[in-house]
Image (tube, rainbow, N blue to C red):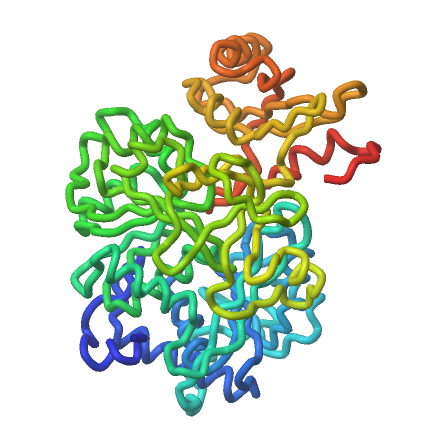
Length: 511
């Protein structure tokens, strides 16, 4: 279903709950049609592109639904990109219209000056020079076009290079976005979501889990709570206040909630939780054990990508196979291929993880080489390395590009990072290889100390001593540096290259 259906059958029911109050399905649909009218009046037609550079706010979904119900592609741009990266995405997605958050004045000025192909510029939440006011623009728009199928076109985070978009042909069956339709089916069938459910979304809405899951919740007819920004205690308060039934997090959010004082964690009633999903990054085994001890069987994990996927694992299954990301979805498949492109049939053999292209074809927008290079037959990969055990459970080791090769040994940073996160004085950590004349690479750990802890030589010695009893010698970091804040996106994704690249300046080695 889509919000047009719920606007008829449940017009007064809350679709979104924001800091500014609730937005009903009737209001959301009416506002989305005003957005569609604005864009149609400006000359946009089926297949044209729209970009959103917005913080987490209700207008975000007025715009995405306005695009989706009028046959347009919409691209939510990572608000943590540099101005040049934002300008690149806007050009690359062929956006004819851009909606920008009025609080992002410098970024808006850059886009206005650089992206000359954009002829509709709208500021949301205020006024900006050279931009139309959102409220004024939608209020004066004329007639909305007939309903049609549009779709999201989302970009990678750019952790290893220029961001690239996954683009699928626009649907023609009246069912809207393929990704959201799949998620709607999963939410209703596996996770028992109904119009009476309440979903909490602390993720940035430019991320696939933010926009697609929330719009899938809209399709179910349930209410979605949109957090402006993640805050550990606020999450617990919202769960208690709204009797949240479903929620989704990334492991760094689990870590921050677990670091709350026990008195705070016990203060709030979270018993309404039925299903808590997590994904997007490896979850340290100790962290997940502690979350299951706190929130029980509600915790489910999945592994997927914007391109498709993936696997699922319940809390009880995970307890029998700690560290797994689960078995393949009922409609999916997981396979391991070796470096020669051969499918590995034996269990427990490490290789590159591949998944089938369930939707038929997709392409990386304007990147034919990448579209071809990540495929073997009907399978695609996002570059993760892992193994499938004898019972069909997938265990991820790391991204292939992040693997360290030291003295001929393959070393997976995620394993080391999980150990370091178990040390109480470590708030966050990144492990990667740096140049070494004899070994090729040696292991470097960059640590963000826990709150109130100072990064000193003494702390580095403590951390290395902690590692020495928990890691093989060849996996133990050779040195530790400290940072005040890890370059991590709010969705949990770490921009490791920003830490790693300075160590490789002037070194002839492709990363």
